[in-house]
View 1: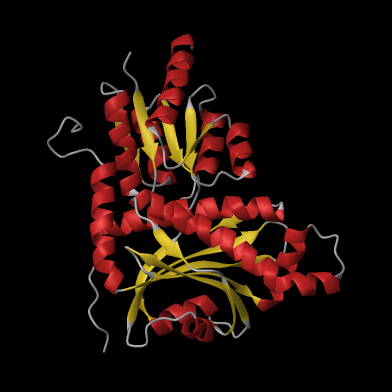
View 2: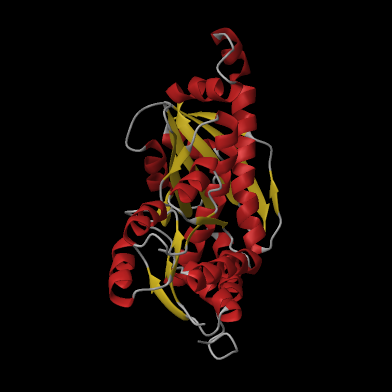
Length: 217
Length: 125
């Protein structure tokens, strides 16, 4: 039986999606600089789901082995951010980042380090944009490389064991003209949802006209 | 001179945010809103706005597609594409469509500069 989560209002959900859109768009701009090709993004999806459902979506119903760069964040909000892609795309990503001039053995040797640094730049860009918009500071852990199925990655990324549901935010990305694609996902612990509602409420107040104030039109 | 401005964004919050800035910058302008490409094109036909602000990343047709269509239908119309996606391809596509590119989060300063330019172009037309 799922515990009943604190529901977000339509406008709060909209605000969160917009935050994700800004965060991931900034992250995509960072990735574009690194790979030298345009990064295509889907529209963000924000849902409150069970841990299993989140894992299924990460795996996209496929059994392919996945690679993820994982970073935990804490502060007013706590959770995990992941850059996830099929393992088969991993070397292609490293090749794109290193400029394509290196022999395969060098690319393989650099793989872990390059993935960690790529994830660090992308995920920090995304989280920092969200934190700035919410006027909060988030402490972000060092990047960690995980591999396995969607559910294995989700379990390894350290979700609290007793937590039935999480706030799950994900976006598909792909690199134009290259076989590189995956997800940027943020999993937020539900205890953080109460704080998130407060912060989203402040953001909404700040961004919108006052109902009866001088901004009313 | 008062003009009519259309805000196109699938996010209600983003539309409200732009509306707030417009209230400060151009309180006498008429604001119209649309949440997707179809509504935007309907508003263009029904209400004939003078200036259009387009979000880039929307479900269905994105803001750059709409900007392309606007350029064909209304070549002189001041149009801005608003996005946090500051990749050079996106900025260039906006430029190719004859639209200004305004980074998100949108600042009052950036919007004011675009509106000044838009007013000059409309006055000269």
